[in-house]
Every structure is written in C-alpha cells, then in structure tokens.
Image (cartoon, rainbow, N blue to C red):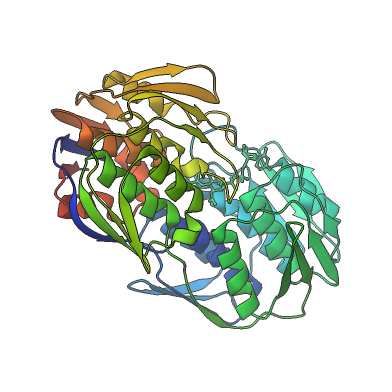
Length: 417
Ligand code: EPZ
C-alpha cells in the first residue's frame, strides 16, 4: 500500500509535459491480438494499467518489447483464448480482449472484469453486442465462455453509449466477414485513436454522421506504427490542481479540441488561461464563480473530470451543483473532502451541492479510485497543514510519475510505499 505525506499551501509554478492516453493504449494492446505482425506504439504512458494489460497479452502467448515510451507488440504466437483471472478481476479494460479473441479464435473465456469502484461496472452491453453478432454465451458461476462459429458482420445496437463496449464491437467486426454497423457508438477521442490504429493496420472503418461506425471486415490486418494521443484527463487534472493552488503552470501536450467542455467551464468560473498550439497556460485568479457540472459522454463534460473539478467548485463563491449522469456511485470522494472541512450536501448517488469558498484543513484521507485519488492530492495541496493520503497506488494506475511531476511544480509531497 502506498501513501503520500503532503504539506499544503504552495501554489504550483512551472511546466509539466502530459503523457500518452491510458484509455487509448490499453485497447491498442488488445488490438495487437488481431495481427500476426509487429504493432509499434509510441508515447506509451508509464502507468501500472499498461503493465497489467501486457501481462494478459503475454499470458495469451503474445510477445512484447518496451523501449522507454515505445512498445513493440507481436501477436503471432498467441495460442490461448483464456483470459488471466487475477488481472481481469482488477482491470476493467481487460474486457476489450474479448472482441479480438472472438474474431481470431471464435472463442474467449473471460471473467467478470473488475475496475475502479465507481459503480457496479456491468458488462451486459458487451454480451448483448456479441449475441447480436451471433455468439453463444455460457455463463458459468465464475466465468463466461463465449463462442462463435463464423464471425460475421451485422448491425448492432447498444442500449446506451459504452466506451469499451464500442471498442469491443470494433475490435471484433474488423475481421468479421461482411459489413457491420455499430449504432449509438462512443465518440471519445480515445476510441477515435484506436480506430486510427486499426485503419493503419488495414481495417476498413468509416464514421457515419448519425454517430455510427460502418465497418467492412477484411481477411487480415498487418503491421502498423502509431503515436498515442495525449491524455486529455491527465492534462485537465493538472490544469485544475494548478488553478486550485492558485498557481501559474504551463501544460504541454494539451489538445483543446479534446477538452472543449472542460475549457468552457474553466472560463465560465473565471480561471484565466491562454492556449497556444498544444500548450495550456493557467494563471492565478482573484475569485471564482459557482457553476453546474453535468457529466455526459463525449463531447460532454467528462465523468473522469467530475471529481477533480470539485476542487475549483470548493473555491467558488456560492452554491455549485454536480450531476453525475454516467456512473452510479462516483460521488463517494466528497465524503473525504467533507472530512477536510468542505461544505458539501450530498443529495443522492448522482447529485451534490458544493458551497464555497470552503477552507480545507489537512487530514488523513484515502483514495477510492484513480480520479478521486488525484482529486484528494489536489485537495491536500490547497489545504492548510499536513495530510496523509492512503491507497495512492490507485493513482499510479493512470497518472505517470504523478507525485514527482507535482514536486517539480513546487508541491510538498513525500511518497511512502
Ligand atoms: C471507460 O469505462 C473508461 N475506462 C472510464 O475511465 C470512463 O470513465 C468511462 O469509459 C466513461 O467515459 C476505460 O476506457 C478503461 P462505459 P467503461 O462502458 O467503458 C454502464 C478512468 O478513470 N454500462 O462507457 O467501463 C456503466 O455502468 C476510467 O480512466 C452498463 O450498464 O465505461 C456506466 O454507468 C474510469 N453495461 C455507463 O454504462 C455495460 O455493459 C458507461 O460505461 C457497460 C457499461
């Protein structure tokens, strides 16, 4: 178990470079199952979830080589369709191995994936998609056995937008015979980046303006090289923590078009910033205004920024509202902020009011998931006095060298493992 000892009060000053997107690279590792040639990924973030996905890839028989932030994958020797139980139980993204294994072997044995404790994390949309493709699903008490005789394209519908559900359908349909149309698809930049890699591998995927992906299956996918897009959630998290400590920071590798709603909200509450090319510069502010945050699928306000953004609502002068529409229990971190003295009213699992400005006092808190963990680090940095944050290994799942980067910006953090 890792923990951070933090002394709050220092405004963050300086420049930070943002790494490649965790939620893009994890699925690209699964995409390497689809080819027996080399897939080279660049700008790979050094986060523990990547190591977990590589462990599963290796268990299946895949080979890989890491050269700093470059990753060379080769799925030629993959011989198994059984996913590693221990890792899949911890890692939600592991579910996207199902689509490529079904496409390659016509079979996959998978356990119910785990992941951050932000809600039940069901997989019914994924199973329904595979059933629509013609797969048979046997549900044993501990795992699912999914099989399909002839991977054939079809039109599949999702009951609601699902990021990994869309990715599983894409990763299956690119090798399925004939045409597929994936309806009510997720449009997140990370999904688009996965599509960019698949097209470089020879996949035939077109975007239809009704929010669909039209796929024409091909016989084989070949080698490709791809530079992963910057992590928009990590970039925005640093922008928020920089503003929350009333600092002055420059964030490199920040693509404004991937953070449209976030920037709109930042401007609306009064955080002064400037953008030139792929740099976001945050300046100190006098006072902040309250607002309402409603999380939505892309291009709406991202659910992964709901917790971090609360740090700025705590400083706003007045009553702000949070409406978390995507997950059923992603407000628990507010209880940790209340321990620090925040004036928060939790209405139900989806709604809360934040009354600012709230002065925070350092104390002992624990991170519940990676985004809540990053939020609590920001809260401790803006609080008066000392804080200890437990379970910080959860943060390392998706934030590369998080405490080191913050220390370089002037934060007083000691990491204890
Ligand atoms: C992805 O999770 C991301 N994870 C999440 O990021 C992100 O918060 C989420 O998309 C939403 O943007 C990865 O890409 C690895 P969903 P995913 O399927 O695909 C319900 C982070 O912090 N649902 O889009 O699991 C589900 O419960 C993580 O990096 C079903 O009911 O999310 C949720 O309420 C956290 N049945 C909603 O749909 C299903 O079969 C959206 O989930 C699937 C999902």
